[in-house]
Length: 274
Image (cartoon, rainbow, N blue to C red; front, side):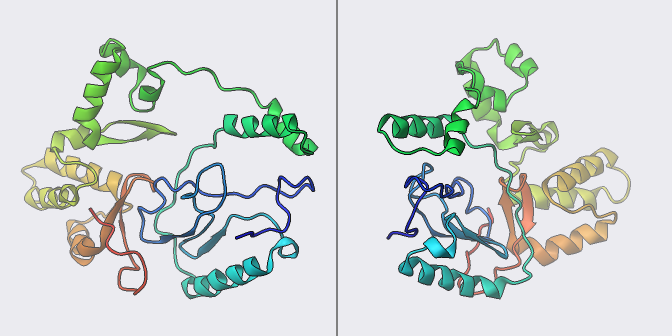
């Protein structure tokens, strides 16, 4: 179905649309994929969708340049999103910058084919090209330079290390992951609800003051993998008891166990907990 009567490739300076990558988009109960579209991110990218009380419409044209069918399509999700007015965002996504090379490739081909490319689009070709990667570049997102050096820079050894420790990885910086030593010490994966339950049990077991080190470990993990920071043991017990059946784990929101407030609403995503 044609959405816009004029698109960004028609030579009239229409803006290019914006679709969200589908990778990791649906790991939270407060998001919905409604429709894909034609984009460099593929047909499964989110052209029309919902995140909390936000309606995502990836097409850039104003209503003047929408087809008659598209105007009706736009009205339906606007009507649908109204029932989420005031709903809080549960998972706040952290996404990296889009790659520019594919965009440049498309621009160059359009110029080669004699298409009328705007000055704004031509200017995008002046962006600096990324450096050529080497075999270890993907691992640098997961391991520090010290860890890579200790493994001798051998991709096979690094891959084995990642397989063994993958369940203990968590964000250590912008676009950076690393092994969580406290989590590995506990022996539970961060996306396993048993980790949260075990940590709360450790708080209870150490409440008599005889297991101080376990209390410190439990609090560290609970505050790292949830958005809670209760001062009292009773508060942790009450929080887990009230929300255990609706907790879900989200990597996109920062490797956190979050509470699904929409589980009781019909027609929404089901149990996303793991």
